[in-house]
Length: 312
Ligand code: COA
Ligand code: ZN
Image (cartoon, rainbow, N blue to C red):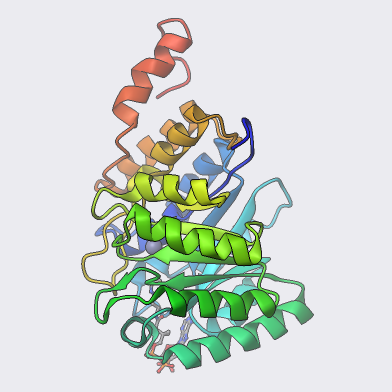
């Protein structure tokens, strides 16, 4: 692996993280958090979801969040959608990229959106056609790529087939999502190396939850396979309300620290990222915060001469 090779991090905290917090943030608070993450140099942020406000009350107002982020700038924003209605709402709000969810199990498709896997695939294919005409980018995340809380272990062949189909249909990026944090590094290495061998790494990303403390190990396994795009969540916020046992995503600050120490370039300023992490903890009251922060704060202070000017 080459030194200073670039890795793109998408912070999904404002969506995957906030959707499952006991405290529902206002649109202004969500925009403050997104602004703090962007200020740290995070190049890509998932800012919310266009889902039923009855299903996920914390994501109501995502149209206002997206509409407030219209000024062209360096940050790539995306919003999650579950169906064509979500696509239409995202487009109307001014979104330039949407993240549609596909499924590697029938149980999760049914519980999350009341669809079969095939119905979600048909909706995604329709969304790709509409998005091409509208000039929007489409990311497709394959949910429960390693195990499903309802159907058990996932057959990697199912994930490979869904990925292949949607890469062939021109999806801008496919994200392999370990929704409940059930994969181990060996499974991750095996699946991601097959995918990279067959399709190259450019349009592939990974999304890990830290439920069993394997989040970073799984990131490492995927990096070794050549994956260069990762979702992570500021302060380790997260958990899917429809997937029992799903805890937070792997924390952005942990992933960035590991990758930077391995010689990769994420373009992210760790001091500013820790400020965003502090803000996430302050706003939600429940964000666990990554493991790295306790060590990073004094280390960064030492780097800057014993004072702590860049860290609140
Ligand atoms: N955004 C907002 N409202 C939506 C919607 C969307 N993307 N899709 C459907 N709806 C509305 C419908 O218009 C309908 O409204 P009405 O009752 O006022 O007529 C209502 O939701 C129910 O629609 P229906 O098609 O019967 O579906 P449902 O009740 O089975 O709900 C979803 C389906 C997809 C809307 C709902 O399950 C959902 O939002 N799931 C998201 C889950 C999620 O975010 N998971 C975590 C991320 S993976
Ligand atoms: Zn997730």
